[in-house]
Length: 303
Image (cartoon, rainbow, N blue to C red):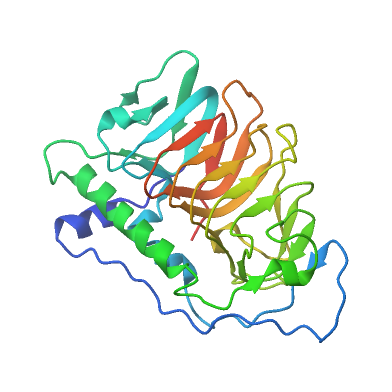
């Protein structure tokens, strides 16, 4: 059973001592490939230089215990197989959460839409300044700070995957080492094959994906789910997706996504009517829109 690290956080909030520790990142990671090297699929990224000793997970602050956060627009579940092993929240009112229950309350569930939250649901409940409302507001602020800390403005010099061979913005059928990656095409997609992240036997290996627009996982077409695979010590807690617009994760259902997704717009998992479960080993934080889930498992990674 998931246990949310919440007691200490509530105490800090009540005492007014909650601040977000956003670490200063080191220099941009750089590409040390040999000149003129040719790549064939699957493409292996060059080894980057990572900032030593930087606790990347610390950038999440009070948002870290949340498996799902739906900004001010809430979170909706369809299906009976959704399980959130983490907290769930919104800065919207309680009715913005539908199709879920935690140990304290039921949020507009129906016989066909039942989602278990093995943590706590936090919303902007009355009265203003209540503990749940303060926790939700703090998480929203820290999610935004994390989004900014992962941006090209804060982490410039990301590797353009197009320079490694393959299509611009296409991550499918690639094997990538630790680093900061940007999309010259504005969007990233994982289509036609899985993405493999190689930790190179470093448990602190960091992977950051920056895109000005959308993230699309699955395809080509609606019938082919894709996955992110971790090898050689890569860990879900060290994978970050900074999404400038919306994210769509395996509209066909199925597949295994990895990492913390922070999207400016909405994030959607699967499509209504699909019964094959989509799995996210990480968390999803939508800043300005909702999160929609259909038979989705979210497993919060240990920090």
